[in-house]
Amino acid sequence: MADAAFIGLSILTVGSALFALESREIIYGAIALAISMLGIAGFFILLDSHFVAMFQIAVYVGAVAVLVIFIVMLVRTEELFSTTDDHGRKVAGVIFSLLMMIGIGIILFSSEFTKVEFNPVLDKIVNKIGNEMLTYYAPVFILLALTLAGSIIGALSLARREDDKENNYDTNDENSNSDKINTEQDSNSSYRENQGFQDTEKFDLKKKSVFAKTSQKASRVIKLGRSKTK
Amino acid sequence: MTELINYLTVSLILVGIGVYGLIVKRNAIRMIFAIEIIANAANLNLIAFSRYLGDIQGQVFALFAIAIAAAEVAVGLAIVVIAYRLYKEIDVEEYRSMRG
Image 1: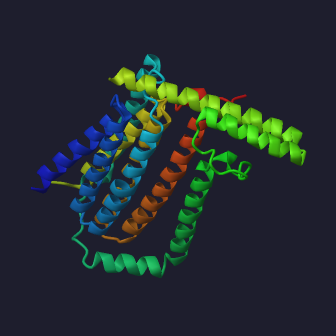
Image 2: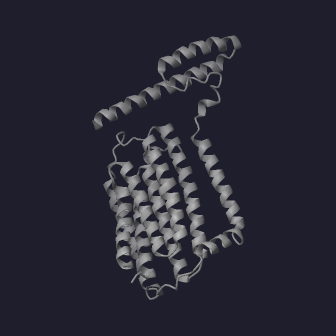
């Protein structure tokens, strides 16, 4: 029973991990990665670590997979560049990873690990985990919380738009219509000339025109990709 | 029977797949996928050894590792978004402004 479940889970996990790397559309790859994480959670259940399995499902399948799918939809550029891999590099990657697997496998199978059986199941695992986390590992727990908060703040501040703090005199130029930006530039330039900010105004104009151009280009590319897929 | 060595073998295969993806793929998001696969293989190893030793420490470590991996994915994807905004590409061969 456990044997069949183990074989099925290992086929599911390894197969979907391969599919995550080799699928043509990256969005299917993201879904396959989530399925592979589910397979890992199944292994955890087979190993009687139900709490870690639930944590794995909540974090990986719930949060990370959704985040990855969101980013993939945001950065959808599969049409923009050819995804054909370098043939020589592919061969080199296969050879290198096979060599690594064979090497570590020889070491593993010649060791004592082939003979051992598992110890009997522990009881009250969740109680013990809670005890360990809040007594011996309490400093690590606090550091982990700080690391998570810091990384989330860092990610937010990294992904923030750079041109928000300079354009705070008008807040409606978010919608990147090129002619709207032009009219706004005119009104802003009269305002700026009264204030006497000639140089910064020129700089702002240049930046805004570059921004409008790139947004136009991006919308054209998106249209092109849509028409191609149709 | 399902013994320790079977779990170690699955973990080894996953690490091999992850290293293959890191070497071959040029898409930044796929490289993040490969890193995730390697991190999960490490977690599987931790849990398998925890079960084999009958010790709870491995599970605590796996919990910490899962949380750190989630933070790492958030920061990595933010970096991909910025790089995409700067270069209009997610091909890592094109990110060459720091190359000498």
